[in-house]
Length: 66
Image (tube, rainbow, N blue to C red):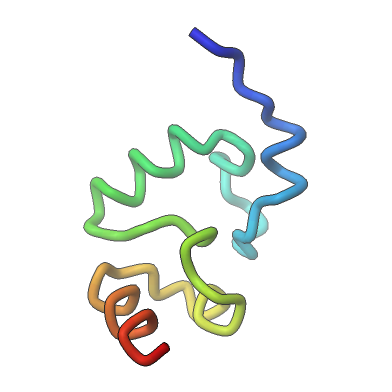
């Protein structure tokens, strides 16, 4: 199994939720959000990500209008 490159991942992480314990640990982030019927911050444009609405519905609405 590959080692997680946490510091490299953090540098590219789009999440603005400062106290997130999953920053840089993408597999945990995806598992957490998917368990809540959400997607991670990196799949949303910055203006939408800042709303913290990471729902599947918001993702579809956001990407349908492009």
